[in-house]
Length: 519
Image 1 (spheres, rainbow, N blue to C red):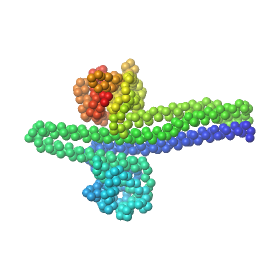
Image 2 (cartoon, rainbow, N blue to C red):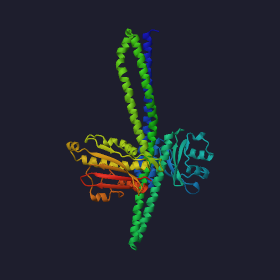
Image 3 (cartoon, rainbow, N blue to C red):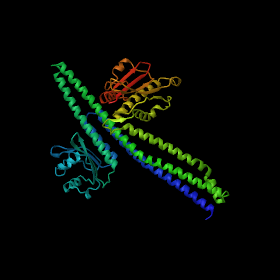
Image 4 (cartoon, rainbow, N blue to C red):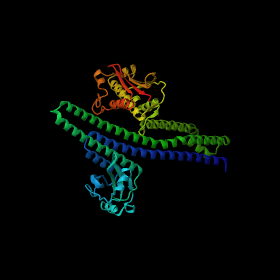
């Protein structure tokens, strides 16, 4: 074999490896894109269900929304909710069915099909996925029951409330057997949990109605008692709203953590292989350069290929491409780490947390709101971090406080900038300053201080007096719930036994000061 032929073969192998690498990367991107699309669809459904819970006190409406959205999202023939009664015998109370399959609304199962031991298994979190009813190991009576309903595959998850099994959320496939996917099982279980929240909300509403009726009946007899009952009703409504908000943040935290985990694996794969790809590219280019040195005058065929390929440009540009890919992969890894740190949905106990890390991750998540927009320059962020030790706290909840306070500061600055000219914004740029320091004490518990300051328009004394009241907001309808600062106050003061203070003067900006004791 001549040197030119060997050179051509080496060049062909080089481009073949490049194509294989690109194909592998493209496949990884396609697979993760599909997973992200499924996660986005799940997020939309969870948001719609959560919005239903927040906007209505009718559990039947929410349950009907759940079965409707599950049937569309899973593209299955029938979705039902079965509620248990005494002795584990109940009926189908909600249904969404696709024509021409028969309705089974009101259908009651016999106790032989749902023995008590099966109910106990569901109470402990059992999930049953049957891909082919005819080939399954179900009891004969259960097979007969499913056959009468034209079911060929089904997926069953429990709806649990406290320590009881309220019912089941069931998806039926009537056209043919079906292999249920893991993400479908996870979707059904999350929506079953949302159904439990809706039912709890309805019970809370019934309790509030009873309390209101009692207050009205006794109002003419004893005004003091009526006022106490009214306060109880208000507290109950506040607890209900905060329960919905907490569950929403929990579901969102689980979704964010799950998506971040799914992204992290392929990104690490890509990031790790880029080093090898760069090394292989360097080796191959060195081999090509050696062949060029040994064969400075290639034949006409090789010369034609070299002119077509533009080897000098490829040799110069390919390492740059790999370097830019490495920068992009590293950026994705940083975002994933921030999402994982911010969610912390699984931290039910206090842990030793780096406060600065939580602030930085929150800023990274809010970066899209801080950067330059079409109608304003970027909002400047000045960080003046002191020397803080790790603090024992609930990291995920404290990150939620940082998110609320910084988001409010951005809202205030954007509202102020919407009324200013570009020249005014450049003369006095919008700015958020975050300062931290450690406050030691010889007689009291030392604590960490976090100050979040904006140079916006500030607020009036009247607004400051109601700042931490539930449902109080100065934002337009649809822009805020009035729960952000109330929940932040609860997290700092009640959960961490700390202090949350606000200093503001109209025309001179606002400062929120958080004090977290080192317990």
